[in-house]
Amino acid sequence: MEIFLISLLCILLAFSLFLLRKNHVKAVQKLPPGPSPLPLIGNIHHLGKQPHKSLAKLAKVYGPIMSLRLGRITTIVITSPTAAREVLQKQDLAFSTRPLPDAIRARDHFKSSVAWLPVGSQWRNLRKIMSSHIFTTSKLDASHHLRMNKVQELVGYVNKCSERGEAVDIGCAAFQTALNLLSNTMFSKDMADPYHGSDTKEFKDTVWNIMKEAGTPNFVDYFPILRSFDPQGIRGRSSVGFGKVIKLFDGMVNERLELKKLGDSEDSTSTDVLDELLKLLRTNEIEKRHANHLLTDLFIAGTDTTSGTVEWAMAEVLRKPETVLAKAKAELNQVIGKGKMVEEADISKLTYLQCIVKESARLHPPVPFLLPRQVTEDVELSGYIIPKNSQVLVNVWAFGRDPTLWENPLSFQPERFMDSKVDVYGHDLELIPFGAGRRKCPGLPLAMRMVPMMVGSLINCFDWKLEGGIAPGDLDMEDKFGITLAKLHPLRAVATPVVP
Image 1 (cartoon, rainbow, N blue to C red):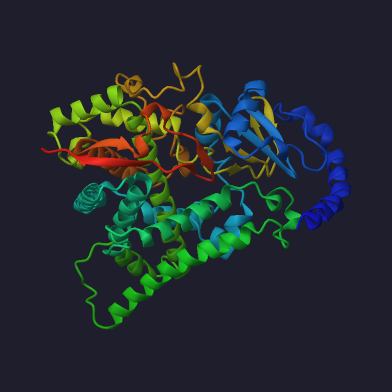
Image 2: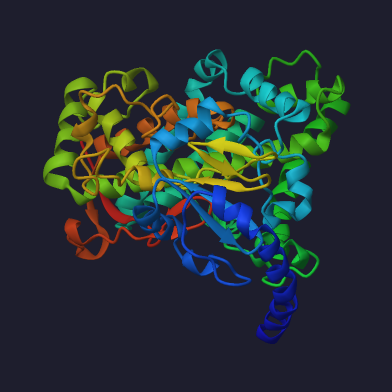
């Protein structure tokens, strides 16, 4: 494999040098500043294993709008809210296209994915379906009992672990809860046994592997001529992951279609999302393959980001038992009562809990670069020219660690939001863990109902000690990079039920 890669890179060298020379003068005059690229590879060597950290460090040298050359691809990195406002709000349409990582080409996912489609009629139709049939306030309000049931199951699962003296893998438990919440909303059924996690772990691993492959630096993305070779095997592995998930959802769609054929009433009172999608299929407002890929998008994004946010929030809270955890328990005790689960109606009254969620999103945004953008024409940005076909990365991870924006930025301090009107809904660019503009995450309203319920209930219903007697201050907080940012070492803690 190494000889093969070296041979391909050598073949590309002459071609790349020719093109670099051809475009050098124009690019140098108009591009934002950035580190000098090496022949052939450009700045790929600057990415490292954790690009969100590497590029944040480079931005301290080259500024908040920085250019790199990743193989043949010009990449613009945005590392300030001011510049992000230009990209995500003021010139949102010009920056609204997505580049297509080769991993997303697996199983032709990019042709039907609302996350990766270009802004156009097909994309608008899928967004309309989500906004009208899935994430409306009225539909979310109507399904609040589902979320309460899933949180009850989460608390029940933690109780079972406590009875057996076992530590809880909080990220896995949160993933299972998010998975069953979505599957009940979509299909009126659980996809995982709430008390046996083997199936959940397999699905979780599949989702994470898709995210990891999509976020892994890929030679094919930097040198498109390599696409037919897939030298790192990324598209191949992604194809396996996407294949498993798409097959699962295709089976569920077919199962419901068969039930309809066997006499299930067309006037059924069922209100799940699959029934809505089947109505749209009958009226040709959506194709079956689009429905399968839409479900794939919803489950991959909805389970991984929600569970990751819960795990990071709990890790930060358990690291500070005498301050953050104590304050959270005191508020919960006062507002809803000791040992009780948090309901959606309680969230607006739990100010400190909301601050914990915001502070966790500041330090650990679910998608550190959001999803990449691309320009289809030359665009002016703050006096620079962003060349046609450049990809644009918005490093929101760096926003949360900027000392010019936040006092003591590396310290977890929910109190910083107590008297602040900053929210996570895309209005305040210094805190945009779910993005902003027309390509903001459509599942944000659901996530902001689910995460506080889960975190608040875990805090209020249990006392916690880290597994193995680890001191709170010694808890490892390293992350691992993919499209999403996961905790490198899963958070495991022993729970003791709190008596109401």
